[in-house]
Image (cartoon, rainbow, N blue to C red; front, side, top):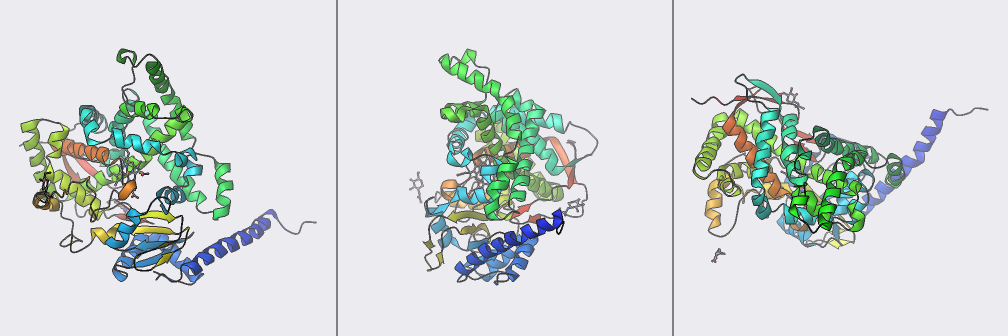
Length: 503
Ligand code: HEM
Ligand SMILES: *[C@@H]1O[C@H](CO)[C@@H](O)[C@H](O)[C@H]1NC(C)=O
Ligand SMILES: *[C@@H]1O[C@H](CO)[C@@H](O)[C@H](O)[C@H]1NC(C)=O
């Protein structure tokens, strides 16, 4: 006797699931009802706002910034509420809170489901962060500056061979193809950093992780572990491990030989340190590969989208930015050559990137999850398990820090930096201040920002010296895309490049 078809069973199954999501969500709605809301507040209607948020999230955050200036508000997403604190006092409170009160990794885990997309060891042990801090700081980057520069020159010659004809290049795709080379020159060294198959794995891993996370986040929270286990972590890790296993063996052999340099073929500064600092358990090719790919994920799209924003400005407003930057690079390098030191004297490029990071902040919410109840200084109470975010907008668009805050003004910090340096305040692109949070803040501030800015500045300097550029469609600068919580440059627009013609 067949009463129900298979499909009907699925529908039956869906009902309790939906109810439980609804129940969970509703529970949270109750607990947070004392906090003002953007969009609808009631349990069912807030779902409509959550859907709207998926498409227009950033517009809603801007609305929050204007309506709830200096206050705390919340907005709904499909799976939970986000509580946003708006203003320097609250931001400072989050910055100061210990990880046991406001957890960075738990918030990240909920967004990209680290346990299931990468592996739980990435949460339990984050020693790769301290290796980034100790190896990719200005002093050590100074030592490998010429390797990075060499790789950038090599990559440009390969990917954008000099041509006297204008040629069309999809901006983001081309920049990623170039950027992954200097980054991996630092991570794994020659010759692996020129192995296209290995380089592609870095890009594929990012796609793997985000696709898996999006799928997982469509399930109610209590099913995530089950679905996550069935899906398993990205298999790209395993393929990358095959490539780096020989490097690990060489490194371990060299270590047991008392580190005689002649015995070592692996010149990869970063991987070497990652191996040396690893516990026995962390030394497997799979785990080391997982960490390298994770750093690719953290660094590749953030850096490349920043450079694409820069290219759109240069190609569109040629005379406003291209010529002054070109002149600066020529003047400094003809006098001092290329080094980390000469690069740090290029104040216009530095200011240009700081302003891009301020105005086109990729992720304007810096999020933590509360592991305990917390009361903010205005008396607002936040229960345990709440997603709490500081909004960088409230810092980046503050009239008192930035005259005409909505205007993009690429050389804003050239003078400001000069003035403020007398008071020992730096406005370099890598310097985090209370009015500049594009690299985050506090303990979890981006440890990769020194590497990122060296690559950004060197690649831009190389571009302006060696190529002429224009937009494919001159009439307008491609608009930014707002997707959920992030802002991206147009990911498909192209720029036209040709070998620079010297008059
Ligand atoms: C323009 C480029 C980049 C931007 C805008 C950027 C931005 C950020 C932000 C906003 C955070 C979170 C901070 C917080 O919530 O307080 C972060 C964390 C992090 N970034 Fe970056 N990043 C960039 C490049 C890189 C690069 C190149 C690497 C790798 C070498 C990297 C590695 C990391 C890591 C490992 C963390 C986590 C730190 C922790 O767990 O404490 N980033 N980054
Ligand atoms: C700035 O730094 C110098 C040298 O490090 C110090 O002598 C001076 O007092 C500092 N100025 C301010 C305003 O903090
Ligand atoms: C990106 O730019 C291209 C070319 O200018 C345009 O055709 C496309 O519609 C833009 N994409 C978005 C999502 O705006």
